[in-house]
Image 1: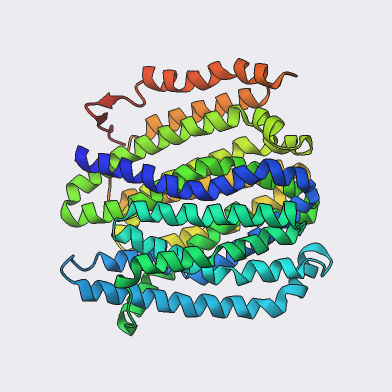
Image 2: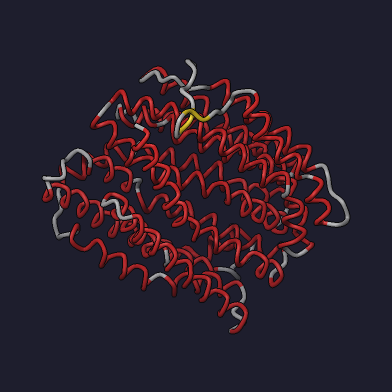
Length: 483
């Protein structure tokens, strides 16, 4: 079991470095773009990117997850069957995503008018939606590399795409003076080369095969996941439109910058989820009891690790914005703590949702996603008018916490597991207190301010260790207590 967990940890590290590419784009360009564009312009970028993200969800149909689940219905010896699964998924996604993208092009002017009260930004919307089929295909090919257990190539594609995107965007914005258009045009120009390279790497798993029975089976698994993806979008992105309506584009820009910082922690969540799903499904197919034990241990490790990451980012958030961004963006720190709480809740879901996936009860994902969507929209209406972006962050946190509780409860009913819930909640409560204290401290000298807050960061692992919330046992960590 320990060997398997070490392999999981290694894959999380590798896939995390691959996902680091997405964060590198945000972090490398953040100090530059926040000095080129004012918060209101940054808010326009955030709004269009938010719209593109929901289109991406619809364009993928959650088929990536379904292909992964169906892939492991066959053994290594059933090469033809696995190739049929992968090919069916790809051709379905290619046709669907292209149709969605082309259908949105004529709607660019009305959408610009709806979002911003002017048709001026229609060309940005067109560039954003035209790049989506390319991104869908690249993402699909990377998921195939995950199935083939080729993390090195997965990482290479990620960094190739990120490096080209950064190069094109900075060239178009800084040299060619393309303004906001340069951001989306740069992303579009960067996609073809990674697309061709990733296709070449997975070409032997693709054919002109297409199986309607396999597609029906995958859609039966995937379609209930769409509300889950939509709920995730609502929790992570819909609040931009509420802020835009009740405040202005400048506050959307501040909120977007706050999200950029919390996305560093989201990197860990995505990296873990990327490695976790194929790892745990494979383990379950071999040893059900071992899989359940690993799931319990992972819950404790993920909760404590995300708590530490949240403390580091939350306590020093003010110093980060004062150092990295233009002074006009400093107030973004006000939303960081609550947003980090939402990320932590989403990270724990990655473990607890496993039982629901294994039992193929994805209908619960759809049901709870509907509850979460309704709750988040209600909280946005309630909290954003009086509190602005802080209210949006609070709505995201409350919704993510409620969704995490529902997933945990259902998973325990379907497949009871010995999660150490008390220890994880204790560690996360401690993290919340430390972040609140750190956010309230700010000295004129930014480096002195960061130094003064260092004891708060060091206090987290010390208390967690002393109270027994996380202890090593052999090469890994202690056996979980009965929940």
